[in-house]
Image (tube, rainbow, N blue to C red; front, top):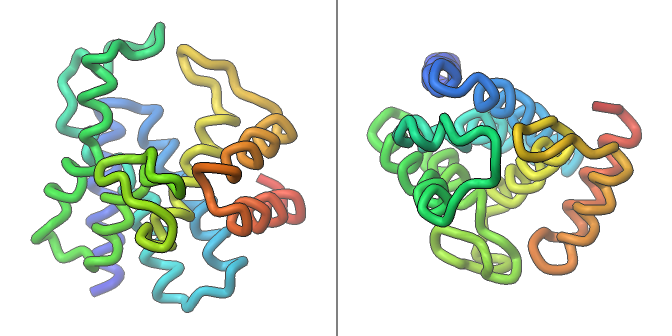
Length: 190
């Protein structure tokens, strides 16, 4: 069953990639970084796999975006587009429910933009209420966005990305997870 679920996840992620090639590659990288952090934390293998799968699917709700969102590649998104973008965790949860995905995977997809201080979305939950897998994916997602060229933002160096993650660990991310992630990347590279 796990193999079929992983194949389904890959197919769904590929469908998003058909609309937005950056998203497919981004999802692969987030999944890879999230799996590495989960492994470094010595989580049980089934938990590592749930986190890896959720990393692959974390942005799947974007498949329901209007074409206008995908065409907006030259500038920072407008307030209207940002409002739509912030709905992708809820859309992802809705898409994945009833498809045979483990409940934890769905919860991680739904919660990957929650932040330690409650400024995240969609629920604005804090600290321990945020699932560990979602925290891990949030760090991996942010890291990949920092070190990758985007139409409206140039990639940052590894050291600059580490600095940003450390600054975010004051409010948005768990500092222990951030330092563990930085250790993993420093020791084993990208």
